[in-house]
Length: 95
Image (cartoon, rainbow, N blue to C red; front, side, top):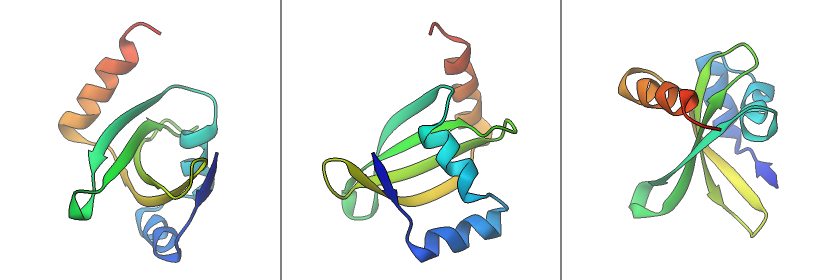
């Protein structure tokens, strides 16, 4: 599966202090990922993938399908609050 990076997404990463390789590790690297269906602008379907970077930071990455095998990254943010608690509870569950 491939991922497209709009230039604004890379600029947003820079403002967050997140490196592109950290996002790619969450999406494609070892470790567990928690996919969650979400709705984007205009109620369009998207997928939020939550996982940990190699350094242990939890990120939520939102992607939308472009083709059957390719997705565009449309958002990235650190996970905090209730969502972080839900993710950590999910992490502790059965594998």
